[in-house]
Image (cartoon, rainbow, N blue to C red; front, side, top):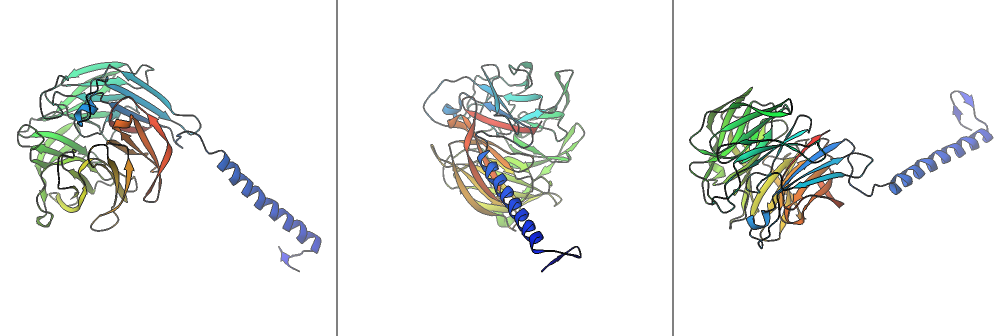
Length: 407
């Protein structure tokens, strides 16, 4: 016999308890089976997400594939937990380009996008695209253009300020700070012009500084590029210093598309100007932002022939790099940041060319633009392992830069 709560348990009582326990186990197993049967036949997100894909119809020409004339377009994809993705694509209203770091700007709770275009051609020649930033209402069913703001050459990149309300755009020699007021963008500040030419940038999570890549003269595919530090206070951006490199790292020539870690303690930078020009293979660099002044202290060498984009997992434990390894070949490289120095963990194949890359805020999903496939690849995250979904998110032709926000 056994006792429960100090009371005597008879054989018949024990039998009833055993039966009840068995029924509970069966119910749990049945619930698990039902949950498996209810696996959704589409991409969904536990928390509402909005994804912006900016699509360059000339991307095929830019990466050396056969000449194809396609319109530029903008795609907005809204994900929720219990409905299929809601996708809207509008073509021919917003000029844009694949030339530049593939990170985009959406502000005001995901309502407005700042989409730059510029006159720098894919091979370093003048193109016909205007130097401007186009502001788009992403809530409007037709993704309406609310304003077009002419800018100096060349608006390489736009990023959301960490406050989610301002957007910062770089041109060759300046930063331009915008805010949307009464449905219209307002230029609220501009930095003093610098002598070098800005190429790409990233903003500290606490909005205290900016790390940019820049070249001494006009950018070409063979330009030497340096790392530069700026102070950011409110709307005011001041030049601070050049970022140096630890002697044991050696020389670098074309850092590109930097990104801050979630805690702001490091910046990952991709060497090679984001294109697979020629050997040697390009490296991933890490800037120690806790040093004053900051300095490049770590490197993962020979990651791929070209490195295009990088995203930190929200935990800060690892990062994923978009790699271009030649015509029609692309990969994702997973970088372990829990070790010192950081190390390369794995590669995953992806449709050529990987461009924009973003984790969901909860870290459960990764989204990667596949330019020549006209879609966004989706991965679930299990520890530091990426598991590809059988589903993709369709975009306009030539997805070239991307942003993501909670809704």
